[in-house]
Length: 599
Ligand code: NOJ
Ligand code: NOJ
Image 1 (cartoon, rainbow, N blue to C red):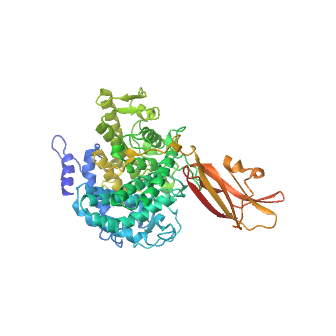
Image 2 (tube, helix red, strand yellow):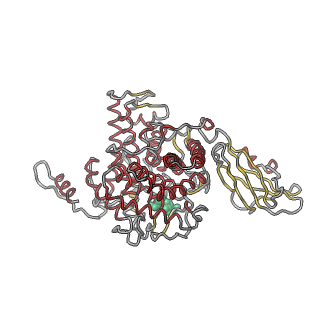
Image 3 (cartoon, rainbow, N blue to C red):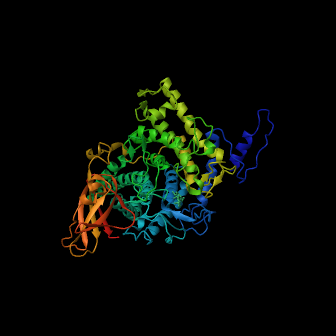
């Protein structure tokens, strides 16, 4: 702190040596950081972000009194919004940074904090909550009280990214322990925790749940991608520990199914990744969402090059998507007005967002920079040049309007010009944070779309983690991969997943009927007879199972559908009441069983 204050005082010396007017460093929100280069911002912000992060972790964080050991509070804010809870997602992402900081040898004192987190996870997994018990879905509960008691209020639950993200964090620690001769600790302490989370992922990845923004109930790209990553790492760890081959075999089957399903989020007609393929609760969205950028960042594998099947940061799909995502904020936030169409702007969760006014977020803006820094790192490290495809062409044309589909050779003049322009573009997003942070360097959740003033939760732990991982990316810091390089995409989804081939959906409807009355099924897609009651599927079978009526339908993998059951009695049709039922077919070859009751 002292060092950085001296440093920034020095920066204030004008060439003539006179001391420029130095703004006092405080929390006054209209005083902004005004860095114009990222290296200076990094020097200033890093200790502040680290302190901000540690302050929010129990048992001894200065802003998290009452939090149990290893508990990460989302933010100290207790109203508008009340974030004094621990979210599984936020905690896992924050601790991934801490584990990486520890395993890379930057701070050996962090081990105690990491062990505290392991202890916390072991306890919280066992806490029964509105999503269930440890064995009936409770692992998908999104948030808990900081005392580790269940949160029993209404919420968008379950959220199925949490156990996967937590597994990735713990596996990073486990791999370090194994490399440092402590396999016994992994086997005895970490592995039982990981088995619960990874079996949860393996068993429930194709069930619906809420997205990372806690709003859309369906299937979400970020969730699917982090589940895929976690399971791949879990398979490698299980193999290293000599776990029973049946576990590895089951996880491998599901990992392949998830990998297939992941492909279906890409829309080749629109040229971007559609964040939620089945917005089951009716949200009308463009599908452009920071969800996708965060995915490239959190499933980065430096060994996988620019692999587009895992949406690596430099892949054509991820770059095309990044442009579409960024551009969606250019005209909707007034702080972005007047900015050139190929320069950095403030970005938020998704353009239709209205939460706290629907503003830009620090962590989403930093994620754009982070994806680009990782892309640059891979291009430079691989030395294979830059492959401009028809998919990524619009991204590259931002920097050179006459760009064409070609490979730009590493080391060529055009390579240097292009990568320099992309670095400047990336830095622009990093500097948005500096431009719209208060002079204290504190990072809230959002900054307003009109004035760029910090708003919503103050000192958001995840914001601090996001600026730190962005700096690491800019510094080309090494991170561990997760095996993305050596994957084989199953043939059945080679045409792009989703539509490629069929899944089985078992419909089970409990309905008591009168003599002569039968239950039929009808819904929104061809396989469900396009809402035509005269052509409805049925009568459903109730042999030995009455009042449960059954039918199995083959539905294209990954397809979102709506449906209802109807009764027919001598030609008289009665529809179920209320809104349409919704669901999504799982991956090719997988089976989904739906249990419904007549309404
Ligand atoms: C609270 C969630 O944390 C936030 O992500 C969401 O936007 C609001 N609820 C509104 O659903
Ligand atoms: C709302 C965000 O949408 C969600 O992703 C996050 O987990 C919570 N706030 C807590 O920070």
